[in-house]
Image (tube, rainbow, N blue to C red; front, top):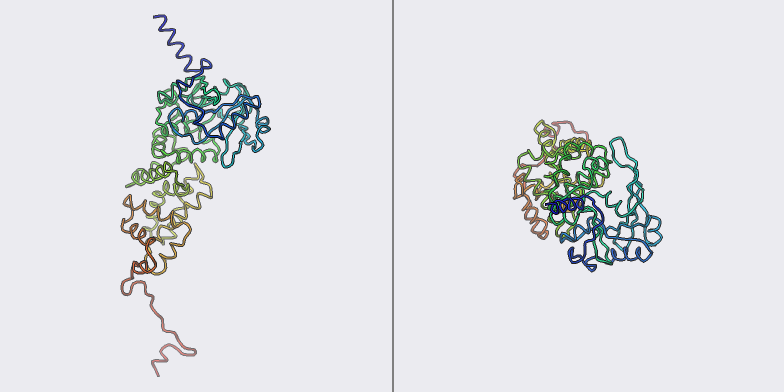
Length: 443
């Protein structure tokens, strides 16, 4: 009985930061040759210069899960200045956390110095606004967000260093916060978004203590700089599991902080089908390693609200194109109160929307001019999305699919001919110089 009790206590202590545990190769199975050359060069050169250097965080987690890591980050006891001296092609970045970007051709390795457990500069809400105190590897592990992200892999020894039971949590597919969740969320509210994104993306369950405070602390996201919030939103949408992420954000009540129109759009007729189709298409392209336009994704997310506003304005007698521009401005104003979309994405988004009425014009030279528009492909893809959810006739999307693939002669034959009298302007009789009305008839 006493032996069992001691075993449980020791296991609990290890799970919650009971010291350094070395996980050998025979247990974790990650060999050095699974890492790319640029990541190995970074750790090897730092170690050759007399420093400690480890692959850290998400890369180790993903390798344990059998996934291909997108990024390989390195943690070291070298200061940013010392790292910069080791690598000629590198630059020091950041103010809140100073990091070094080491460049290898098109690849970039982010190198961070072990963070200390000393005092940090925080704002009134407890959010860390500056943290450049260096410490030991154990200090650094304690400062990381989740146990599965606090793993250090030494490529030379092929060992994983684990201070918080992260390997066990990976094996059990569990996402657990290091330390007191309320304090950690106050330090950095973006951790709430990260918890949802990682859980949905990797198929992890959020530990009950980690999940419990999220809904009541959701308002803390209002204190996060807009650029950082938008960056996290992009990571969520480009995670390859964007629909699952969005639904979990909604379940946790986090969407109000930066996507206030979500509930309205899901409640609209065919709203859920439209959004789910759009995001699943995005996920598919990401999994197939195809390019994805952020402007297109945001156009999809906000379209139903624009459409609803546009329809109301047209019903009130406003001219269609003027009504569309007014609807876009109104929806953007509501969205920008929570999360402003950068201009480079917002411009693409609005162009996709304003192209939609032009797809209905299938006579004369208008279809040919539309084909030459630089956003035609994005606009056409968006039209197909609308057709797949039943918002516009499938026949319209099929017509444009065929029109762009056939030769000029067949395109001419496909044009919709106006009915007799339709679209023809009344011709006014020109009066000659010095001729009054009715003068010709009098002669």
